[in-house]
Length: 253
Image 1 (tube, helix red, strand yellow):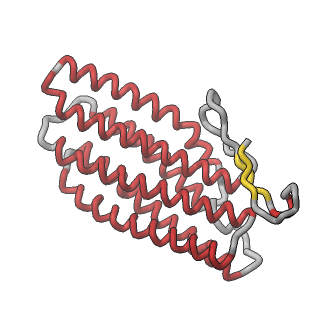
Image 2: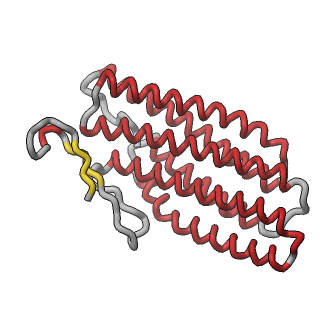
Image 3: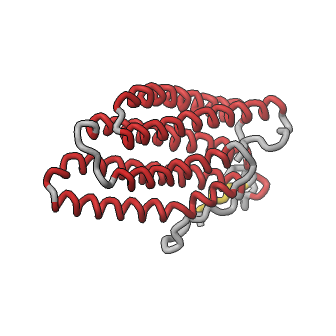
């Protein structure tokens, strides 16, 4: 999802959208590096990597603040409508999800300091596999963010259930190990914490994918879980408003 795929009718506005997209891309790249480093710290039991994750988290927070300021400026000066409105709102929501991913990556990295005090656990390989899937999810939504191709975002939707299944399997096995061996309880709690944060990062990646699809297809956001009611959102142009009052309408179906 490029925020400005074609030349905007107002050149300055198009440039502002491009700058917003660039800032989101930088923020996404920073968050992806954070997550990869945090996972490396867990798998290698290397607490020396934690400081780098913590420092990047501060940078990500600053980037989110910058995105919010840019969005507020766009609303104040441009009063975006229709596609421009979807782009601007989506940018704000995506920045929020990316910031949360950064926070969760930092939380994961902190657990490396605790796990370094214990012998390696057999379930670390499952944590690594779960982490690899989540990193791939994040990478694909960031690819979709920097291009006009929404297919990577759709693939993220389709792998969300796999993340949940792997997380649930890991939790069951970890709880069983903790029951059989009391010595596994303390390090096991840290592993469960890491796994939960990875599952939540997967949810945020899915949120970003939904926002990207909203821009690409304004008429529908399809939930990846077809057993639950879907939320459909359509933003109407003023000319499409039923009573002609010129207001933007968000319709929930």
